[in-house]
Amino acid sequence: MAAPIEEKDQATQDPRKEGIASSIRVVPHVPKGGIMFQDITPLLLDPKVFKDTVDLFIERYTGKDISAVAGTKMCRALRILEEGIEARGFIFGPPIALAIGAKFIPLRKPRKLPGEVISEEYVLEYGRDCLEMHVGAVQQGEHVLVVDDLIATGGTLCAAISLLERAGAKVVECACVIELPELKGRERLKVTPLYVLVESH
Image (cartoon, rainbow, N blue to C red):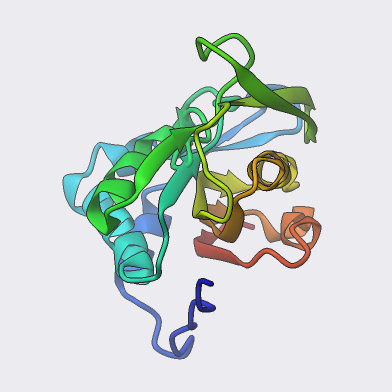
């Protein structure tokens, strides 16, 4: 069984997080009116900040008995994945997985994965969507980290957790670069821990 991941003293804020926060651009009304899109493109264009972002996750999860990283699908203009949440989750997931010696599992939009899949529908802050994962991507009892760039309402992460648990995996934590606390996505995760690098208000 994976041990709980210990929190470091919050009073000693890592200075790397300041650089990450300042590299995130807010674009109003994308993908639709009223949505404040958190654009991580400037972060990706700065090699030092990009490396700092990945390194903070690697430092947290190295030696934590995690056998798979899953990233979610791309629904916000750019996507990433670690257990494979598509789009931006795909950006951070693979380097983290490689560094901690875990496999990477992409969680993708419908009809993007060939072969037999299982799926999970969910509600976003601006519509509905669906995640799919290959049958057999995880084994019973495997410890999985779910990675995405952002948590807003929590719908994507909840769908990822449900998908993985249906396949018999244990989600030990969700990790995001950005959290929008006002949307209370953290509360929807219930017992699954959430780790974020920066908050956006």
